[in-house]
Image (cartoon, rainbow, N blue to C red; front, side, top):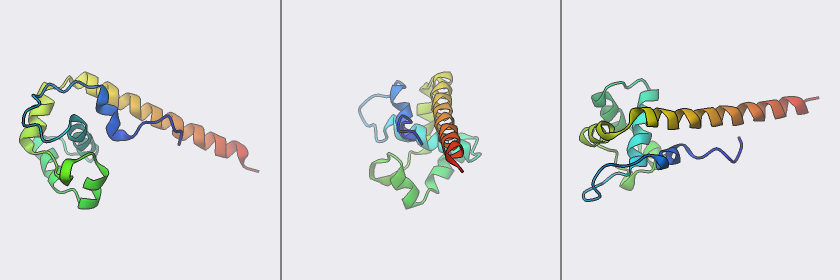
Length: 116
């Protein structure tokens, strides 16, 4: 894939974090990465998202931007999503997916055109 595609969890950098700095245990990137991956895995309620996150293996947790491999709680997920502009979040994720797909298909076309 092309080098211009940003890592998944870094796509949330452009989104504002409305939480107070005091007592913040999880970065916005970490919470939104967990939520997005849970939604992809058909976890559609806040409770399901939190339970899915708790069930992540240590190997999966190490791949995410989690502090001390701790996943956000139900309360944290609810608070973050309650303050989030959902349309802005959807646009950020959609733009990233489009870049990934464009890079993937460009790579496929490159390999296809080089075939004998």
